[in-house]
Amino acid sequence: MDRPAPGGITWTIAGERLALLAWPRAILLQLAHPLVAAGVAQHSGFRSSPFAPFARLHATVGAMRQLTFGTDEEAAAVVRRIRGIHDRVNGTLHEAAGPHASGTRYSAHDPALLLWVHATLLDSHVRILEQVLRPFTPDERDRYCGEAAVFASVLGAPPDDLPRTWRELQDFIAAQIESGRVTVGADARTLAPAILRPAFSWLLLPLQSAGELVTIGSLPPAVRNGYGFLWSATRERRHQRVLAMLRATRALTPDSFARWPEAGRVREPQLT
Figure 1: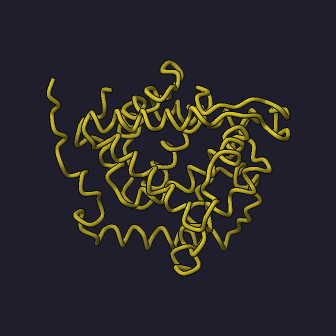
Figure 2: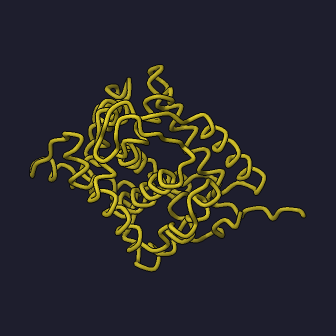
């Protein structure tokens, strides 16, 4: 796997701990595809216990860090593990949603679904981090799309269909929403509270509320409306205040704390 070189835009984005803020948005976008939501609803165990969402997030972020910063062997092991999980995720849609009829088959190996999941991650990382880290240049956005394509490709997304520029990514996402293929269904609305308000998040109520504003405020309006999330000028002002607080906090936080430790290391060359 020809992974992004150290020091590039992918390392900049993946190395930020604040990139965690992008995950709830990405997951809600993924669930807005009825076939993805059905797979999660029928096969995921993240609602099996109060701690399951945190364990799932920890495992997913750990896997992404190994894919980006780990050795070739570690990255290959992550790919095998993800493919093994995908082997078990298949079934049928229980009720119609948008153009997807009841009984439509889904599989985690479906190239179209892999492409949608990949697109939501790219879009969410850029949109969230740009608001709390710094604006990325058009060239950096394009390079991120191009560099990240390798990860989706090795997992089974069709290489020729992968968006390799920011414009291609935006066109793809818009087309999926406008076509109705991405439309929030019952499964997604049932799963959403566990993403936005996992168990025990009330113990950190101010942080939980801030994260919810960042997530909901950054969703495409059609998806936000599909979930039934209310939005107003007042909530938008609060959203902007939260972002300003996050920008100020990140500006004052040393990289040694704000970035994952492995993001500052040079990837070791592999013996052949």
